Length: 425
Ligand code: GLA
Image: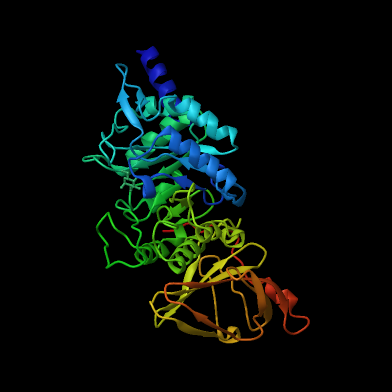
């Protein structure tokens, strides 16, 4: 009896010791590439190797893209012990060899599974095999797991994701854990302690604007995803991000739309997972995906998601606080026609309720840089007048605030909260 109690107690202690996610990962939103948006089930080791090569040769790696993630359909069968194996026709060299190849390029390797008994495309899911799958992933050298939510009838979402989190932790190899639950069970409430990012909506389609599809898990347009994710900014921060889904840049929208989509993902501090064919992209697509000054907005170490400051006649003004008293500002034209934008900074009272900070345009002149034109365009001392094409953005970085009246410098460091990480209710 005593021995049973001891053994049970030790088991419980072990479980408690393992009840955590890998901390210190994804302190800025993860960046990489994922196969699904462009290739669906047409994945193979040849494709993934070529994508890894292209990630390096195109300059994507140097711009910060790191994870190469195979989405659904890599799976073969489970063996008689229940361990999963890749489809031997598609991945004849096996996953370890593929991971080694990706690692040899200085990149990281990601894979996909599902909390249900089958994945969304009908391949074997992890339900009932979580610990075995996590062991395999560690053996192969997996650094990132996207974990889906199909065929999960009767499962509690928080519990199911916690089981996989614990399995990954027990396997011992640090893994970024991407919760792909489409926002159905409000993962922003429980996600931060379980994973490093969580999807906020159903699947992104390659459309800028769709009819409101709320409630449906497929076909969310870029604008609909922005609206949903905007409501959730309090939950995002270093190590735990809202995930508005993978990028559709280069997959068929206009250049304006791609630019707006990419800019807004950066304003939302979203994970940047390219979803196009990196082996074959236009100069325009590459230029959008690798604009380092725009990426720097996404990757800013403060790790605070941007907010919608105003909306009028189809024009929205967004702000995102950055480190070192800088701000990103993005003017999004949701309409299909060109719009005149006039903004007299001194009359604007911008205030971030989340971190209690304000740019105080009446007291300080910020240097203004246009991040797509890649040039400085003056300071906030003079009103901004711009023409913004339909479905496009004007994206600015405001930095180096200088007092308009000498002696006002102290006011810049106005009231701050003790912590930049408020606990959302
Ligand atoms: C779901 C996910 C997608 C993708 C597919 C794969 O729809 O939300 O991102 O992973 O499954 O089948």
